[in-house]
Amino acid sequence: MRNKIAVLATGSSSGETGGAERFYGGLRNSLADRGVDADIVTVVSDESSFEAIEETYLRFYDLDMSEFDGVISTKAPAYLVRHPNHVCYLQHTMRVFYDMFDLEFPRPDSGLQAQRALIQQLDTAALQCPRTRSRFVIGKQVRDRLREYNGLDAEVLYQASNMTGFACRDYDYIFMPGRLHRWKRVSLVIEAMRYVGTPVRLIISGCGEDENVLRKMANGDTRIAFVGRVTDEQLLSLYADALVVPFVPIREDFGLVTLEAFRSHKPVITCRDSGEPANIVKDGISGYVCDPDPVKIAQCIEELYKNPGKAVTMGRAGAESIADITWDKVAARLITALGY
Image (cartoon, rainbow, N blue to C red):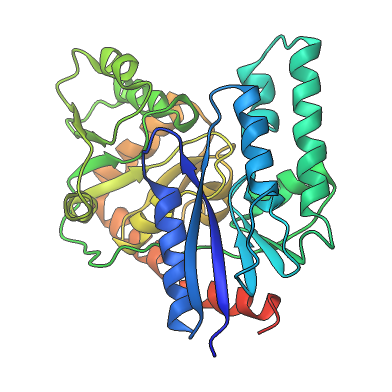
C-alpha cells in the first residue's frame, strides 16, 4: 500500500491563484512521480484583519489530518497542524509581522507590537520539534529570516518551475513579469527608463494592487507597455524574445521569475537587497546585481542593448547555473524526511 501524504496548502480568501498554487501542484506531482499517494489539502487563509488571522491559525491547529500517513506544510500558518509525522517545506511566514513590519508600520503602536510578538511566538512554537519533525525552506532568504526572528535553522531546497516549453528566439525588449505590488518594486524599472537613452521597449505583464499608480508613472513614455494578465503560452513567448528580465523586489523569498528567465536563456537584472534572486544571479556572469537605484538599473539595460552578444552569453550561463534544480530532488528529500 502506498503512503498517503498531504500537501497542506493555504488558499486565498479572494480566490486568486498564482505562484503558490503552482508550488503546491509541482510538489504534489513530484511526490506522485515517486510513488507517493499525495493530495493537496487547501484551507482558506484570511489575512484581512488580525482577528481573521487568529481564526486562520486556529483553523489549521484544529484540522484533523489523521487519515494521512504524513503531512507537508508549506505557507504560514499551515505549520500549526497537529500530526505525528509532520515536516514543513516553508515558503514563508507572514512577512508583515517579520521583515516587512517596519516598512508597513513605520510608527506602530503597542497593539501592533503585541500582535507581531504573538505571531512570532506561535510560529516559533509550531516549527520546533516535536511539532515539526524537519524544517526545509525554499531559499536562503527564508532560512536567514527564520534564524533571525525565530532562532530556528532549516535546510534549503530550491523549488523548480512547473512550466515547460521554454525557448530562446530573439533579444528584443525588456520584459518584466509578475505581480504589480509595491514589494516587487516595478516602479524602480519604470523610473530607470527615464535614464535609458536607447529606443528599447519595456513590456510589463501581470496585474496587482499598484497597477494604476504604475501606469500613471509610465504615462508619456511610449516605450512602456502594460499587457495585463497573460496565459502560460504568452508568458513563454514573451520570455523567448526578451533581451533581459529585470526582477528587483525587496527581500524576495525565492521568485520563479529568475528561474524562468534563465530557462529561456535570458540574463536577469536584480538588486543587492532583492533577497534570493541576488543569491541566484551571478553579477557580471548570468546578469547584474546592482544597487536599487534607477540610474544603475538603466546602465545595466543600456549595456545589454548595446552589446546583445553579452546578453546571449549571460543567458546561457544562467541556464547552466540552474540545471540541477528539479522537483524530483525536492520530493526525494521530503520523502526521506518523512521516513519513507
